[in-house]
Image 1 (tube, rainbow, N blue to C red):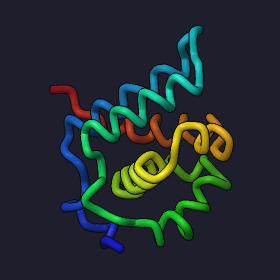
Image 2: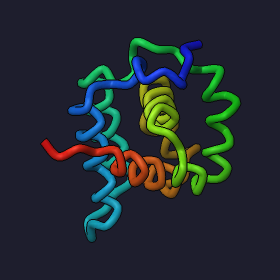
Image 3: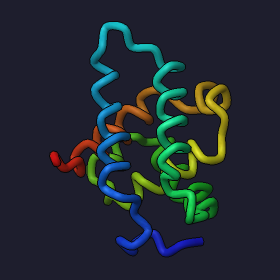
Length: 120
């Protein structure tokens, strides 16, 4: 397991910005959760978002807290959000995520990630 408190584990700012932009899709009238998950997975895989780190233990313990109470994302550090999204999308298929994860969880994670977005 990586030390998730180290900034060195973070992906580059461009990858963070790409994922954060998906937070706006929840407000779209054409919102489709399956389509969003597919786009997120493709973006995460294409950008190699958090692929250098294995944080399965964190996801199985602390990550479960965020699944149970997505409001925790509102004060989560950037490293937690990146680890959560990376572990989720790098290790599960879209259908599995759709079956097990509420759209509310993904929305809260992406909205918090948007707080760390930098305009370039």
